Length: 290
Image 1 (cartoon, rainbow, N blue to C red):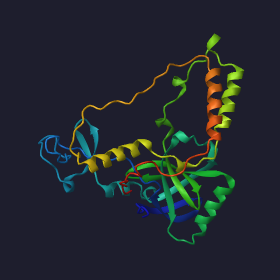
Image 2 (tube, rainbow, N blue to C red):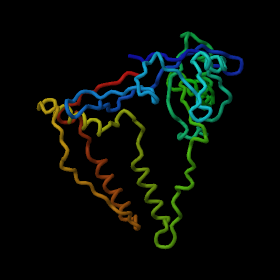
Image 3 (spheres, helix red, strand yellow):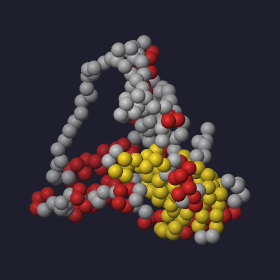
Image 4 (cartoon, one colour):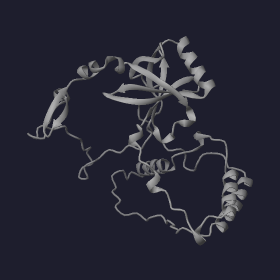
């Protein structure tokens, strides 16, 4: 079932305006746990309460406030915030176009699909085709949930996608984390670089994202099913036999490891892959709605 559109407005570039809607592009399938009272396993809830009186506050009595001085607030309603700049609240405005390769992946945050409100929208099809053929993406801005956001409009398959972007000032500089260049016996040799490049080339395959699974989630769900089938749903296990973990220090002479890696990878690629599901069957999945 497709996720519902949660925002409707227009996508504009130049003088062209295209009616669009935003739909989530991802469906979260993360493990979800409920906090329980250890005494009777009843769910533990969260209360919205007045920090001065300690009394619970119902949703209809809650308003949004901006703290302009310590413990002093300006109250702002949703209608006031929307009216502050009505054009921006209902428009994805493309400011400029850049080469797709110039946008650092670390800036990408959350993906959405831009759905045309008219299936035969000529402007939508034109923008999609032009971006696909030029390798460009549109850098846009819009207002989502009272915050102005930067975004990237990009062709994805047969539709246009909108990926929210982080602002440059939100990204930490990596320079302070960069390793120092090794000198003397620890320096990297030309032969090691060539061997590493060969290993990378040998391990390079066509990107198939669907073949990667969340092994940790599958094992947790298998554990859940095991406890349900055995009737031990309320058994609290404080101590378990820990799996052995091997920790290795960094080795300065990398050549033997690189050669062993190449040899091991060559053997694996000659071994035919096994097909079929894991033993015990696929654990049941509880999907969360977006």
